[in-house]
Each structure stands twice: as structure tokens, then as C-alpha cells.
Picture 1 (cartoon, rainbow, N blue to C red):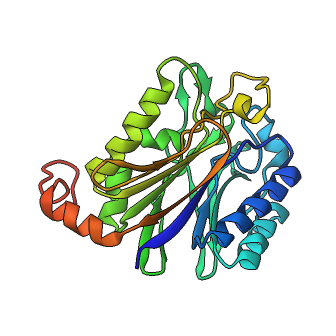
Picture 2 (picture 1 turned 60 degrees about the horizontal axis):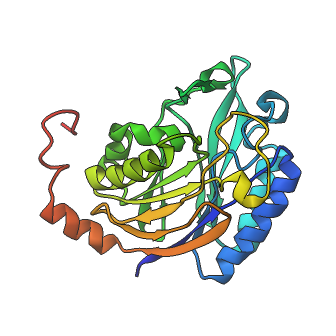
Length: 269
């Protein structure tokens, strides 16, 4: 059976407690729609432009503990972006994945030191490729700027994943929406995986004035098939995208377009 998932495109603010209330509401909506997993954007804990050090918490802290309770109450898996303390005094940009039978986390590997923003000043990079299984479907985790690095998504495929989740808080600017759409489709196609990209909604479309130049989101979350075609997409404003991931389609596409098997560089030995 296809795996039914939900992508919750929201605008988070600087207060982690208020954002938790929003996550609970949206998780309940996803559960009512029959989703087995709901993915929230990067920085679901607190939006970029917030001082991250004072709000960062460990994975056993109160914010993550409440996310676990939200997932338990709804009976589905929740994936949400948060910030955890790093050993060097910075924070780590972390995805928490939690729910029935699932408990893992991913630390963003590629930091957004681009377009005049220096994420590495306050955020320490991760180093591990992370996947988890839900209802027999293996899922890989990636975050925002990671989308510019195809090797991570091929690593998901090499680990057996047929779906990559990409929470993001994409920066606005000339050509940035076009890059987001191009890159997400390309990563699905060149790894032959389903790609579920969920971004922060455009703050202005949510009635919020972005007070900083930090990457606070442009919306346009999408579910993209392993052939690179967009199956479902949201606009700039808040919304809940619900779609189905058919693992059989991955098998069919990989049989037709054997890019993973045909690799000469960077493939499995």
C-alpha cells in the first residue's frame, strides 16, 4: 500500500512554545487526513533571525519531549526542525523524527554560507547520513541547503531509501523560487527517489512582516515523484499538502532509468 504523508507549510515565530501549539494543531489535521507521517519545516522550533543559543535544547529536553507527545497523541510520525546545543558553543540544526516505532534525528550537514548569510557562525555541521523505516518504507532526512548536494540524496538511495524528506526555510530573493523548484526536482530524478520538500511559508503570505534578512521561507512545498515530476505543490501561503508515496514506482523508474547502477563516480563499491 502507498504511504500517505503530509507536509505542513507553516510560518513559525521566535517563541518555541507558540510554535509547539501550531505543530499540535497541524499534526491533528494530518492525522484526520489519514497521514502516517507529517513533516514540518526547518526551524519549526523557532524561526531564523531568532537568537538560537538561548533557545537550543537537547533531544531529551522539554521541546522535543512535547513533540514526542504530540506524535504519540496523534498516532503518527512527526518530523520537525529544531536546534540542539553543539559541543563548541554553537547549536546544531537538527531534524527530530519521532512517533510510533520511530525515534531518530539528523543534524544538517551542509550549512547555508551563501547569498550573504553565514549559518556556520552560529551552527555546527553534522556528518552522518540518517534514514529510518516507517511501514516498510525507508526514508532519508535532509535539510534545506543540503538540496544543492546530490551526493546526500544518492546516499539515501544507497542506504535503501525510496523517499527523502527535505524540511527547509528557503531564503527569498531574485531567482530563488526557480532554484528551489529546479533543485528539488533534480534531486528526486538523479537519486530516483520520491522527494517531499516542505518549506516555511512566505511570512508575508501569512500576514507576518519579516524583520530580518535571514532565510524565513518562500513556501512552494512539493511532493515530487522519482521521475522528477511534481505530483502536488502548495503556493506561498500556509497549507497542508497530503499525498501518497508509491514504492513500486521507484522500482519501475530505477528499472527504466538506471542512473544509480550506471554511476562511475561516487557509487557504492
